[in-house]
Length: 384
Image (cartoon, rainbow, N blue to C red; front, side, top):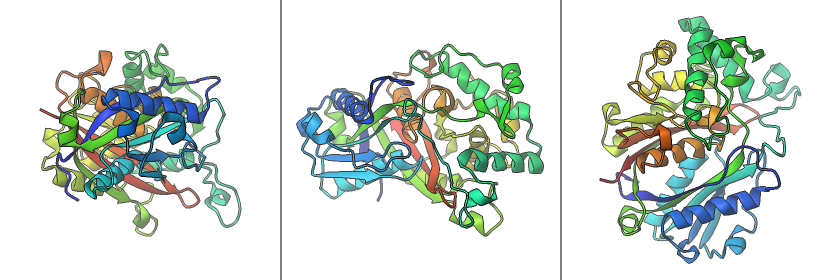
């Protein structure tokens, strides 16, 4: 499928973020969907397709949301692809629209994983699972990636700490961010107790109550709606299946493969990108992806972030709202939502002066028992 600006995001809905006592997953999703529909200037009856992302640790079909919201979709799908679910949902929506099955599709996620104290990524320790050999979730898995980078390239704890310190500074400019009002200095970071070496608590993404929804339609239809249009210019996917037999495990994502397809599909190159919204479940993810995307060479990611390049006033702003480490964890919808806010001029105090094209990534396990991760890359741009 050739995207290149044929499809668009016409509406974005976000709920409050953080701890939302008294709210359940269904009410959070319903709020996000309603806000996205209103943001697009549509009515509930205009939505003829729905794609749900299951809440963390829960496989569900979205429940009674169509009845609750007065929607009559032609299809109601559930997608689960880890942190690539958001952009995979947009991909599926575009395909359904191209096939003539829908005109306006709402893609959404939402949950109460913080309030419900959901346990994420736990692997049972039996002889047939990685838990028996020390793998007890994505945190430990990515810690091995950080350790390998330190051993092979000399990444330092100070360089790694530049990631959470920068993202926390961004979040402290955004009142809706989950960690707004909680500054973090490099000294504070270095003094934190380890959780899984070399990670401390600030290296990890948050757990969050909250929801996000995106309305997808054709670019032509979006231009007839009252809100600003964000064009879907290119998309690419990758998977780390081969890492387990080519000695590249704990060394790389599959971002490079996804990036190549996304840029080629969009007809642009890296120099056209104004900002990045990276899926960073853990701080090493920013370092690795900067290298794999080609913004710096192998082993240079640590120095790149420590030199301030990813700050709001740097050469390549990254995760401008604070990302999953400080804004909120909505899985793959966190970077997508912030990209839409930037491209529609609604990013508040972290709004970039030049935000015409953004690169968004996704990353997440698709088979937790064997820790195989999917990766995705999407090019979004402001409609001129």
